[in-house]
Amino acid sequence: MSSIIVKLFSVIFVLMIFPKWSESVNVYSLETRYIEVPIDHFSATATSKTFNLRYLINSKNYVKGGPIFIYTGGEREITIAAQNTGFLFEISPIFNALIIFVEHRYYGTSLPFGNASFTITENLRYLTTTQVLADFAFLIQELKKNFFPNFSQADTKTEPIIAFGGYYAGMLAAWLRMKYPYSVRAALTSSAPLFYFPGLTSCEGYYQKVTQIFERYGQEKCVKTIKLGWDIIENLAKSKIGMDYISSTWKLCSKLKTAEDVQILIDWLSNIFIELSMANYPYPSEYYNPVPAFPVMVFCDKLNTAYFNDTKGFIQSFANALQIYTNYTGRITCNNIYSKEEDLNEVAWKYQTCTELIMPKCSTAQDMFITNNWVYEQFALDCYKKFGVKPKPNFVFLAYGVNKLKYYTNMLFSSSTIDPASWGVVDLNKADKTDKSLVTYQIMDAPHLMEFRGTNPSDNDYILQARKFYISILKKWLK
Ligand SMILES: *[C@@H]1O[C@H](CO)[C@@H](O)[C@H](O)[C@H]1NC(C)=O
Ligand SMILES: *[C@@H]1O[C@H](CO)[C@@H](O)[C@H](O)[C@H]1NC(C)=O
Ligand SMILES: *[C@@H]1O[C@H](CO)[C@@H](O)[C@H](O)[C@H]1NC(C)=O
Ligand SMILES: *[C@@H]1O[C@H](CO)[C@@H](O)[C@H](O)[C@H]1NC(C)=O
Image (cartoon, rainbow, N blue to C red; front, side, top):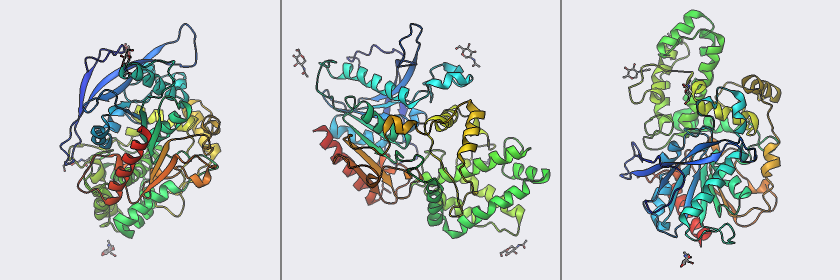
């Protein structure tokens, strides 16, 4: 690595990412680097400031002249994507590829205004997809200078660089290809809900998919218990005694006191069901929290001991089941239901979904969540109260065209039949006549982004086929 001139930063340390729990012996070693990027790419004022954007780099299998695989970070800390995308490390020897994971501004350590990035709402105004894509293109330009010896801005050739991403990161990989087509040759996306915008995709599918996973892996009783459980919890939580009972039985870090606390508890629970369904891998994992193999099945086995005629026993069964998700390591002393509110990455995502990424989720009688219509006016009011912003539901249509894909090339839009995050992925039947190099691919029965993970003996044929297909399309793009 020492031969590479990185004018960027000298603060380099090695981050070893061990795929915990997995049987794989691979150790993905990544160096952490930083690149100085403008806070505002679109202004030339003399006072313009910069900040350090974090990226991770692995050159173990890189051979000079080989391609760069760049994972365009999304709504979580970039180390998490690196930890859960073993596929890139495993295929890098085939291609002699360099691997980069770049962090999204305002997430992880890539904070434009340091610790004031979130304390002053005004400081959030550079949290836009337009700025993010410019960050990625800016980094790629630097990488080209460093890794392609005779790179010149005046050249007409395009370097072999491919963007990768899952969910929102996949949306960004595709948008990068659309907005900066000279920058990356192609985009390989999985569960990227590029069509999940008002008028194009309805709001109820996400929760329905979560419910289907619980039906399938946890039996009908589990779904019924959760569905009827909301009333039991809400009724019990109407009294102080009830709130105290839930607080102590579920070992909450702070006692429930107000109706607002109860609402936060309900959101916390809903989120646990979503994350259990997405992390329902056939082997132990820790995509969100450490969980056993098939966590939905294990959770439901415990919950299925609950009876509705016995409120206290019901709350107790729930407490036991929740441990599968909240306390699988046995090391958690109490449950903090406010953790999402306190997590700055969550705040950043909330801001994004309040401004440009309006992707409504609603629940109906067809799912196991509390029925919740999505009403634009209420949503907009909440966003205003929280951030002083007004949602821009048309922005993505203006900036990216959403389903107007006719003039774009070289993108793969992969999805899974059971992943809730696949709700709203690209459907070429809903797009205008597109170029043949835009391809959709559907994986049967795969939990969230499972094919992006490292090889595991429990991988089924669908996963193996998907990875083979990805390798073949990459070969085509890199020819
Ligand atoms: C924020 O960062 C500044 C400068 O690095 C430091 O002086 C200050 O104590 C920090 N504030 C908080 C609340 O961490
Ligand atoms: C780069 O340019 C140098 C000098 O012109 C030349 O010798 C070399 O072959 C070129 N390398 C590549 C990879 O094109
Ligand atoms: C609750 O229902 C179950 C199953 O129907 C029954 O076995 C149990 O005795 C009931 N418990 C109470 C407290 O009524
Ligand atoms: C987590 O598990 C340990 C070991 O079983 C237990 O002592 C602890 O109370 C549990 N914590 C919570 C929050 O349930």
